[in-house]
Image (cartoon, rainbow, N blue to C red; front, side):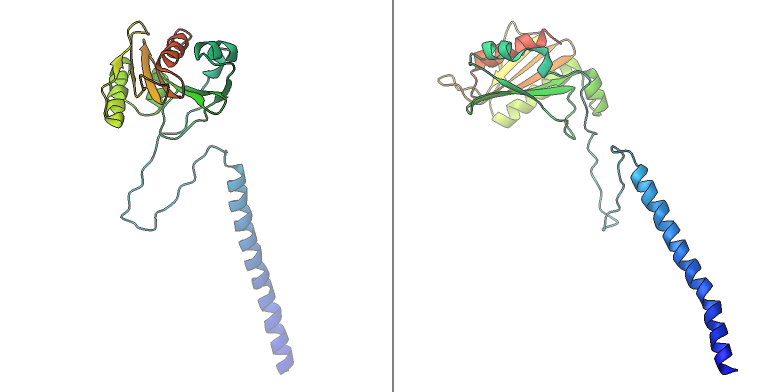
Length: 208
């Protein structure tokens, strides 16, 4: 009789174990399915280990609807920069950089010009309140603060433009910031002269 009682108890325990395994498996399947169905751009929220810690949220990365590299041919850019050839590469979107599009033109190992285009739509998407001339002044102030130099005006380029950081004697690093209407270009030069970088900024502005 004792053996029968032990056997009967085991038979009653087995369905409960099987049910538990099925419930755990079903829960895992639902979780895995939800994770797989999440869109690639969806954010996954996390909880900080320190309940009192504050997280910093950057504006989302922006994908340009209309590129900057395509505005001018490589041959045209090479002529403007006074270099034999250039290779254009689209700048990938970056968190916290509210640009509409970006491009870098490289010529050999010593020359590269990085251009960033900002407009009303990109600034709004990035949570920036300033627009047009107001954002231009903010960018110029930031350049002055970074280089500890007063940017020099570049008359005749767009509605307003400045340059800073170029060595008058030899080509080197420097920046040109130019505005035409609500479009703002920031060109960072490595190896190209101020005159060449300004020519590129002026020609690009005309295409926006």
